[in-house]
Image (tube, rainbow, N blue to C red; front, side):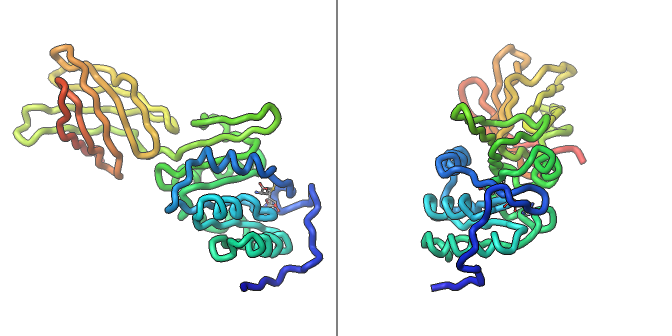
Length: 260
Ligand SMILES: C[S@@+](CC[C@H](N)C(=O)[O-])C[C@H]1O[C@@H](n2cnc3c(N)ncnc32)[C@H](O)[C@@H]1O
């Protein structure tokens, strides 16, 4: 059995001040809902920023058997959370770090949860947007400013928001087939997960239709010169977009490169 330095009589007080925000606990049913929104898989790593008594990482590890980490600034709360994890039988899966969310590295997370404040969410946003595309972010109560959520939950009283970290799709992409019969240029504009753009080939510019970006998965359509509708479904990986181009009822391999 693991041991902690936790003061066995310590009990956190609702509203007690932390470094940047006070401690309030997310209710168990909302924790469950937030984790369900994140669609956690067994290989996910869940980080709770400002972990309080550890209810979110403990629940994640209990329900989904995943590794989870809570970052908590308040030493006694961090010790208390550790003790709670052991008592809940997930001491081996939950790591509580006594630290500052603005200093600790949480880039290994594939799911991030938080119950902070609107201005703290905005301060964290640039770091979050640099995370691995597809990372799910779930926030109790507060949004991310102009970064629109991908999913919203409310029971009429409490609220939770989900975002999926988008890949960088913005730029000019070149499609050239090996014998250079098809020479196309795709220009993509992006704001967070919203994308749009144009495709230029054979001297004609056409809009991208129904463009969607979810993590690293991109999809769009365009009308070809013979008026048939082409559909691209691809994965973004740094400066390569690869997948399939659906044209004339069949799938063709598709790969384009971003112009440096
Ligand atoms: C509103 S509580 C949320 C607790 C827990 N995540 C939950 O949802 O039940 C916010 C927590 O963040 C902690 N906190 C405040 N500023 C922090 C910082 N800069 N770094 C780490 N933890 C912080 C507080 O001590 C508090 O426990």
